[in-house]
Image (cartoon, rainbow, N blue to C red):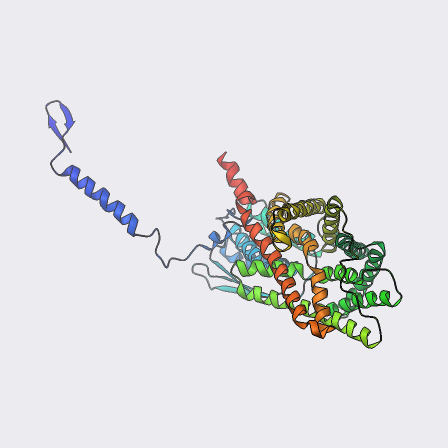
Length: 487
């Protein structure tokens, strides 16, 4: 308060004013300590769900017209179905839909993902709510299309595409031919199992037998798929063929480690992508979708066990000599530099089977080779054979996210092929053999199978953990754009 004293004015502090200000400051500090920042029941903005995802900070068009909301929802629903069909997880589908609808001006959108179905509801101001639903009934191995859809969403959120242009581009992606022809996929499948057998320590005869059996299995699987035979019976038939050819080799006294041949073929049949997606869904809060994927994966494991058991039982009844599952004497592991090369080659080959982009083959091989070196270092520190693969899987999750986002692709297209070489195919075969043939080893077989399943789930969980740990180091296009603007 100021009081005039002659020509000049000077501040005069009235009694009690200083005490009033100190009381007000104390009350404000106390209010901040006991009061929350927001009401406890206030809903979280749906766009905040994008935090930490590759689609954070999308460009939101404020000039969107409400009467075009249905076209935007149809586009988002088509995008969600395509992502699911090509192997994306529930979180990636949800964040893609939220980012696209927000970029096209629809902020009041709710997304519900329930195993195989996607529901999108839009309740704009002063209009009738719109709800659209799509059920995904088919799947396809097409990582190239999955990466292209990821790039499409990235271009939308930075404001480079309008809805009409984005729709044309998405139609081109979903109708485009896969990058590798069918014969190349068959050769890559056979080459993958051959590399795995070499990785496990098999000889040239085992590699040749594995190549032939896998080539035959891929033909049978494609034919059964064309006949619309359920996946359970297709996988069971494939595993029965692999075990049967190994028994035939024993009948003709072929000098080969039969267990290695079967183990190499089983790794190709394991539902690796499904397990990684299921674990990611479970961690990210999609229990229904995770349960459905886990159940589907468990059915694949059951089909593998059933096919091997049927083949072995039929062989025993026909007088075929029992397989020698103790392959420790037949294993002659190559030196570690060769193992690094084999792991990288196997990852590149399985990436071809999954129809990834040709430009992603070399990065996938590089991440796999580095992961094997990490596993060697972890094993040398005393972590053992069980924890070392888990540490390597965490590295794969981190490296896959960083490398894939730099190449404008989702992390799964690099993480899944890089993970395949660590799966315990030999343990699964030994467990099934002990349960179905050696009745006295039922307990040992069950414990071995439980160990193999635990290792597989640990590998999948490690990839998801590494993906989350890499979030601060891998920025999406929206965050990179915001950082460049600040500069």
